[in-house]
Length: 424
Image (tube, rainbow, N blue to C red; front, side):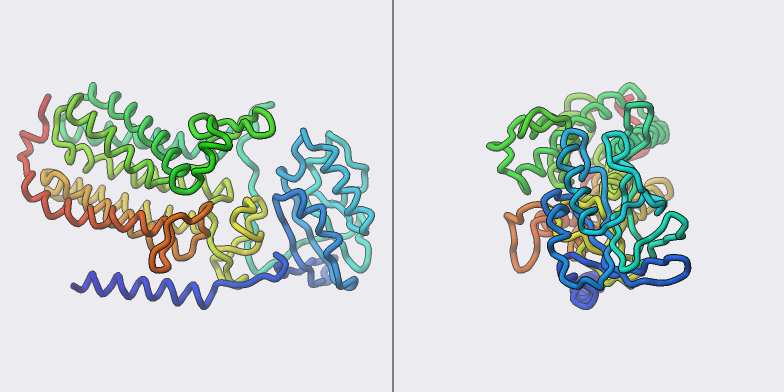
């Protein structure tokens, strides 16, 4: 009963926090200060990944005495759209903007295909800035604008992909350790890894499309199953949408097959151990989302210690203004869940009560998702909304209920340490 009231209190706290601290930013502009040789000049900060909005911004200015800083990013100047990007920069130059690189060094050379990627800031100030001026942008919030990945020659290892490698890599090492602790033959590990990989990727992708972007089945069918886009020509994009609910459903079925046909154990035995690994893997995936500036939070008070500006965020999340780093909130929650499950697995006999750890995993994992959703921007169109709850929250409720049921019925599936080591 105490847990029930705590959850009600937590929901109310999240709702009140959101009402108090969610902010409105007229025109998508946030406030900052441009420090020029020690002189602080108030500026309005603007950024967008939409080229049309970026091009139109100079025409929106109404206050001629106002200074502006426009944050540019790679998506504004893709090589295949060089002419469009160059014409946009020319328009800014005609509107009395000056250009700077990522270190706020003045760029006074003409734009060309080789240097267009170096244009990071467009600044318009009452008094022109000279090459000898020392310039620094100060904001009450942090600006998260990382590179896309590690550049190796002409190849780029994207951080998002790297986080998936870490998730499955550490997961494999961890599951190897678990099988050794349980005295289970290592030959059953490879099939588990294979089926987990298939279930995670395929399920997460289908889940995202079904729950958030069903129009892709008609508009860009092959992008549902392959990391490409066929709209406006063939282009490699990577999988740009993955849903944890879909991955969970797929993993349930692939693990059932593995349990009955491969290792021949109670599926709950496998789920108990898989839940420990998934909790850690989920943290890496959310870190990947953070590097990709996706699944961002709702607008935050610029003075909040959590406020972050994501210049690379997609326009689907709305205006590019300071927001909550909801990806990090989830990642921290998943790490704490992993630590809890690992301690319970190693220090208690709950691993012999098949289903108990998995039920606890379900309850806490989806509770974390449920509460973080209060501070998260919707992903795509919200096709399911009940009582003010969004799609992610509605889909999380059945999983939490299932977790409770599984913990209750787990009492029927207790085994001995000797039975735990079977089949070999």
